[in-house]
Image (tube, rainbow, N blue to C red; front, side, top):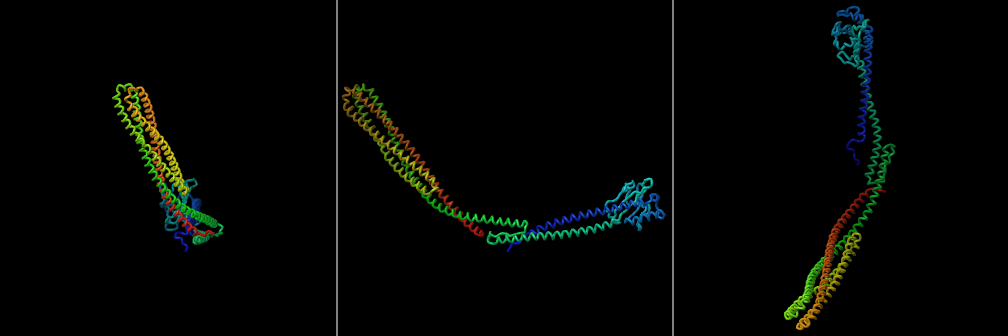
Length: 574
C-alpha cells in the first residue's frame, strides 16, 4: 500500500499561507477603505458644520447679540432671532445651535435653539473656558476635524465670530453638527467592507483550491507513476507520460532522464562487476601460486643462510691458522735476521778464530746445534702452510654449493615472475659473491704453493747450512788455523745465504699477510651475504603473510562483487 503523508500535505502547505495572505490583504484593503470613507465623510460633516456656522453668522444681527442680557428671552428681537436660527438648524441638520459672548474671563450663553428643557438661558456660563475659545473671540475660526462622541450624541463643533459693522467681535456662533448619520453610514460601510472581504476571501480560496487541485492531480499522477517504478522490482525501462504543458511535464521529463541515467549507471556497474569478478578470481589464483613460490624461496634462503654460516665458520678457522702461520713466519724472519747478524759477527771475528780456536770450536759446535734445532723447529712450523690448501679446497666446495643455491634461487625467482624479481637480483649477487670467493680461494692456493716452495727451498738451504757446519766447520775446525782465510770466504758465502734466507722469509711473511687480509675480506663478505640472505628470508616470510592478507582481501572483493551483482540484478535494465 502507498504510504500516507503524516504531516501537512502540499495542498495545505500552499492553501494555509495563501489564505492567510489573502486574509491579510483583504483586511488591509478593508481597513484602508474604511479609513478613506471615514475621512471623507468626516470631512463632509466638517464642511457642513462650517457652512452652517458661516450661514448663521450672516443671518445673526450683531446689534441684537450685543444687546442680549439675562432675562431678555421674552423680547421680540430675541424670539425673532431664535426662530431664524431654528430654521437654519433644521435646514442644515444641526443638533445644537447657539451664540456665546464673554466678559473677558468667562463665556456665557446667548441664544440657544434647543427646544427642550435643557435650553440654556441668556447669561448661563458655558462649559468651556475662555482660553479654549480665545482665538475665536479674537476673530479666528475654529472647526473640529473629528467626530466627538459625547453624552449628547456624535457631534462636530464649529465656532465662528460675530462682528458688528465696525469689525469688532461681539460674540461667536456655536454650531454642533449632528454626525449620527455619518456614524450610521460608517457602520453600514464597515459591514459592507467586512462582507466584501469575506466574499473575496471565499472566492480567492475557491479559486486557489481549484488551481491547487489541478496541480495536485498532476502531482498525484507523477507520484503514482514513481510509486509504480519503485515497487515494480526495479524496472528502469518504464517512463513517466505527463503532458500537462507546465512545470510538471518538465519534472516528468527530468525524471525520465534521471531513470535513463540510472539505467546507464546500473549497466556500467553490471559490466564492471563482471570484469572485476573475473580479475579478482585471476588474482586469487596468481596469489596462490606466488605464495607457494615464495614459500619455496624462503626455504631455499634458509638453506643458503645455513651454508653461509658454515662458510663463515670455516673462514674463521682458516683465518686463525693463517694467523698462526703469520706468527711462525715472523719468528722465522726474526731468526733469519738474527743469523745474518751472527754471520756478520763471524766475519768480524774471523781473525780472532785462530787465537780462540779451542774455545771457539766448542762455542761453534753449541751454536750450530742450537741453530739446527731452531731452524728445524721453524721449518716444521712453516709446514702448517700446507693446511691452507685443504682450507681453500673447502672454500671452493662451499662456493660450488653457494653457486648451486644461487642458481636454485634464480630458478625459483623466475618461477615467481614479477613478485620474485627482487629475489632474482639477490640470487645473482650471491652467485657473483660465490664466484669472487672461488677466485680468491684460487689466488690463496697459488700463494700457498709459492709459500710452500719457498719453505722447501728454505729447508734445503738450512740442511745445506747445517751439513756445511757439521762437515766443514766442525770436522775441519782443527785445520781452522791453516784455513782461516778460506774460512772467511766461506763465512762470506754463509752471510749471503743468510741474507737470502732473511729476504725469502720477509717475502713469505708479506705473502702470508696478504693471505690473511684476503681471508678477512672473504669472511666479511660472507658475513654480509649471510645477513642479506637472512634479511631476504625475513622479507620472504613477511611477503608470504602479506600475500595471505591480499588473498583475504581478494576473497572479500569477490564477496562484494557477488553482493553488487545481486543488487544490480534487482533492476530490470532491458
